[in-house]
Length: 566
Image (cartoon, rainbow, N blue to C red; front, top):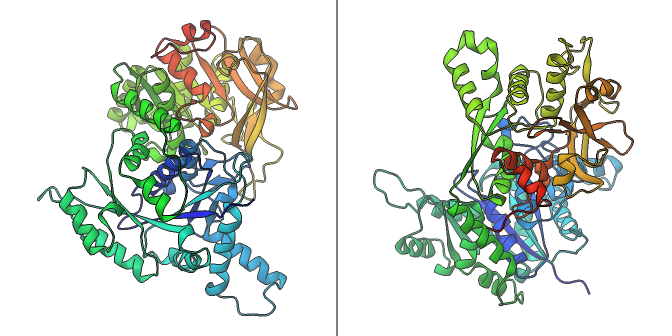
């Protein structure tokens, strides 16, 4: 029998980037811990069809799903917190909605009517949400759909979505829909007083647009004072129990516990008429253990992240999360040293010597080196210098996507003696094109022309370190996002010198994993393992990097890939 779907809409006020994604994920997590099946939808009001063509400085990293969907990084939060796998249609944009409505209009589906924002766009939004909420997640039909509306209430681009949900709340009935509004409580340093006026204005604006918040989640730097809570309750027309404090915490895995402690599950159970088990919840117990362990870590491990977009940490959100998951698994406190790859290049020594020496000092003092994915020629020579240093100094190294391709270039130049070895992406005229265009790549169009999504990698070596880290499996399924690949015709030249391609695609035509002989940990992967890393199940390539950087890799492998009891 089909159960009635429950919808929880998460909106934001005062400022964007307030933490709606973490709060939406945390609400889903505490409901999942009660035995309910949860799915999530992220709505982005921008006109782009998807996030695939964004610079990482716009909205942070582009997160890739199993089906090849290039989506907002908040879907990464949903997948990590809820330990589920979503699809491209779980990310809804203005561009997708308008595209679907315009396609219908061109086909004549509207029978000559004037196509308008209301009702056609708003109906299309509601239809999309209803259909997507029912899509099985990990082969189970969801009972609850958490919907995060990006941006800030009052933004002109999000108005059609607000109007759609104003209508939607009546269509699905009050007991099946509730609204959580996330707002900021600033605390100016001059007075130290928590200010409620921005939240009052934000809630008033939301009400004026036809939505009344059921829970007001207050983002603040310190716990909310009782008097402030009562003031918000009085001026925002809600009970005090409906005002939830979400203050800054040392570890984001504490947020679900914070919501649980304030009775959010009980409130949602009553408000949405959901029978919820009252017994202790195993999943939240794991989260509590993880958060407590995170607070108690004493040993340190530092990783140099050598990239192009280091000024904005969200550009590498999943990479940083994968490092954190691995550090927590081996009970080490992680320090990520962000290094702008251009700072490692000899040209910087002439132009900005201080920047050059600082970059090299960071690199040399790190316990391990990570070169993540990226596009474009800027900074590639700096990354190659970092890889060269890791190889010669026997520093643990992990190269992801472009990082792996540049490791191939570095080895070709400095060991094989091919001084002009390069990727055709950066030097189309190279006599030694060790990295080449893939046949699928369409140079005329940027969006959706890459090798995207979940693909299988077959291990070709029984002694591969990475294969052991994965549990001695024959193959792995990981997510890809690339336009270029290692030139398979040159494979034998590398292998003769101890640079092995230990993983290939199913056809044996694409090089997927590299490993170097006589090195503590020198691994490159063409795929992006960070996208499937989970707090309780860290990604094996990243775990290997952290183990090697902390000097524990060999012991871990000798124990059959089991961590010592904590």
